[in-house]
Length: 256
Image (cartoon, rainbow, N blue to C red):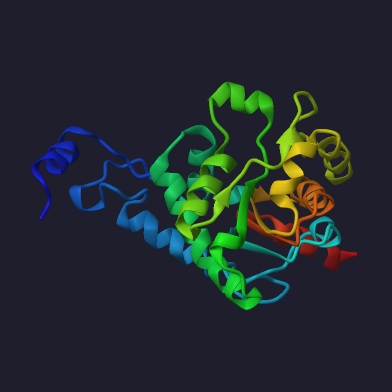
């Protein structure tokens, strides 16, 4: 039975759905989505990949850059499309970028953990052997918004997996905004910005790393981070993202 203090909190506080921004009722108070947006989110996860024909949550297709970096797999929850900006799945991505929300980070982490457990079981890896790492957000954005969404989700993911979180990959000030660059420019830009401290290598060596980023498009940021982790001695790198734009890359490849 709900305690009086908890009931009072639910009455006095107003929480909104991260998708439609409608006020959540008492039954959905601790959820990030209202029932309607939660259903839309679940449906988005079933969209099929044009390459492997599997549902988004089953698809392990990845951008060429990421494949070349040696990533073991790329697991995602849905396929990103700017045309779906008003849909629940994209709203979750935008909310995580602009609002520091434990509810949203926990939702993202719980969905990712479910998708990841199959990979860990296949490799015979216990959560305690895993190091959770986020692809770092641009320093200017961190200063502007006051947080790094990759860190928030990676921390929540580590808690769910009983794993360790560690900000192994770091990012320097400067550089250009990735989304304003083409694929080649993104790769060159991000390589000069990311680094791993020599003193942090002992935490990485011989371990499997679960690397998270919210959205993967060309794979430049994640591939740069993956390469650094392998150079630091990682045994394997499993990549996770909320959304992937790989459908765009596949369609371009098929047109060549």
